Image (cartoon, rainbow, N blue to C red; front, side, top):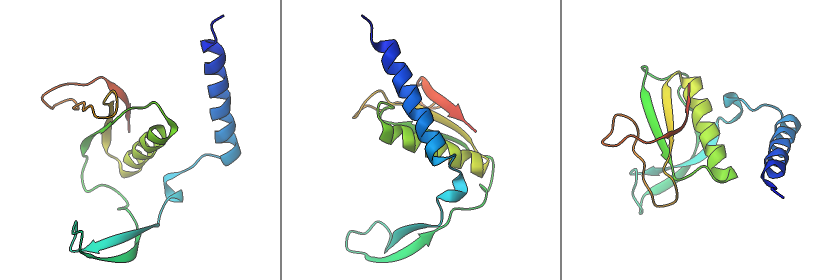
Length: 123
C-alpha cells in the first residue's frame, strides 16, 4: 500500500488548518522588530543596545535579487522562504529563490557562474 497520497493529503490539510486558524499574515504584522545593534558593527567586543528595527517602506530601486536556502525540507526554511518572498513583494523587488539541495551545499542563482533550478520565484 502506497501511503504517499495519504501523507500529502494530511500535510495539505494541516497547512490549510494552520492558515485558517491563524489567519493570513501580512508584512505589516512583523515590524517594528525588537533587535540589537552592535557598535562598531560586526565587532565581537562591540557595545550592544536594543533597537526597534523598521524596514524601508519601499526599495530605492527595482532590484533583482536571489536568495539561496540550504533546503526546503522543513517548516523552518519554508517559513523563512515565505517571509523573504512576502517582503520582496512589499518592497517591490524581483526575487528568485533557490534551493541549494541540502545543508553544506551551495547553489548559485541565475546570472552567476552556475544556474540552479529555482525553488520558485516571488514578486
